[in-house]
Length: 256
Length: 56
Image 1: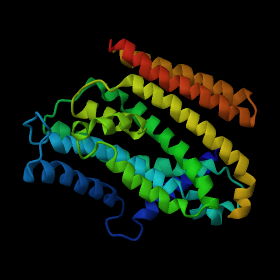
Image 2 (image 1 turned 90 degrees about the vertical axis):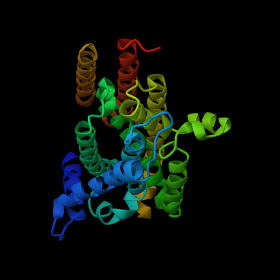
Image 3 (image 1 turned 45 degrees about the vertical axis):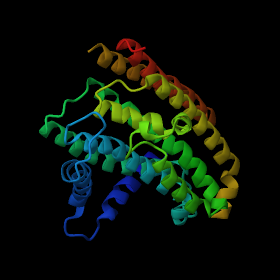
Image 4 (image 1 turned 90 degrees about the horizontal axis):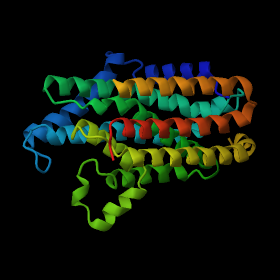
């Protein structure tokens, strides 16, 4: 099963090593999200005058953009790192006997810390600007949990296959780029042609990102039935990924 | 308030079930059982919340 102490140690190290040796150290984990939020909320909203269709609020587009980009950054960052984690940590895997799926969990936890810091700053901004908050904010932990499960399922599958097919690492990067532009994060889905709007139903990130946008921007209830279906699909994906991993585990350790 | 109570109780119930599985089931079957439990848990959260807030 999972090596809990190892996961915690790796998470701590991953987070501290990121800013090791820098003067500001840990504070960089606040500065980066602040700069990003400044760009989304102030530059796009106030300086460039971008607005959501039908809204005159100067922050509407910035809030829409942040509500999509914050979870997407966590999802894409965790998935990109997860898909090569067995190769990146081969020095550890070949030396000590450890449960390989634990390595994905430490990456997800590390990205979660960044996500939580950014989310806290975003919520502070919303409170300061008197942006009305929805009672459905209650669903955020469950949305994020589902997102982590999606990352775990895809990450485990890619991490296993990348050991045998090294090109997959680059492919994942390209797929993430395409996936980003196929998900309505910087644009609203209504600008897509009808066929592309229907194809969005096949995009697993879409119900998740749309749920964040509905809660933060429109103060509306997310499409909960789609989320239930996504949850079942994600668990099935984890089942398949785990079966593939178990089947290839011995060869995988030899290949590293 | 009803939604908060439901989410807390639902989570507590599944945490107890997961704890039971972790203590009593063998290594690999544990993973599959936990996955099934988790799928039920999350779907239950979304569907239960939907019913509680009276959404279609």
